[in-house]
Image (cartoon, rainbow, N blue to C red; front, side, top):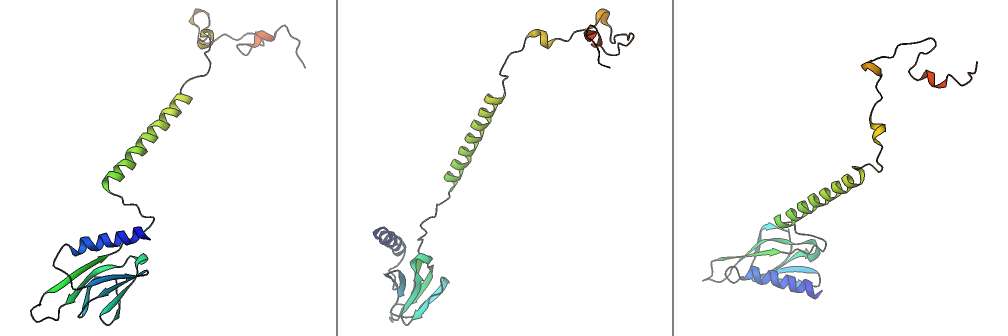
Length: 169
């Protein structure tokens, strides 16, 4: 609660120090925000207030009331219009996304993607065992023949391997 009051006080101090002294006072009672002026208040833009005479209720501060309001002076020598900008940002779960934060997110995403790709390459890129050289070479037929001539009942290249075994009929 103390942090919220400090934040509101800081915002008001910055806003009030930017121009001439304002005739509008911004009051915070419990969780409501009120504007008070000794004359009439006009809304230029922002939250539509509920007027109560010279005091306007802008609503709950958790709903982020904001806007630009004008207090018309009643003094004879004061013909100036005093502007006050009200801006509450009470979002508890908001994160400001500026260019540095966005660049950090993108760079972190690229690094994570590269590390993941490197891990996949390291685990799946290499064979687990080494085969002998004999398995890598293909046995060629004699005299550079492309096809082996057929013999009687030898209709396949390896059919002579089982000649000594009895055949089932």
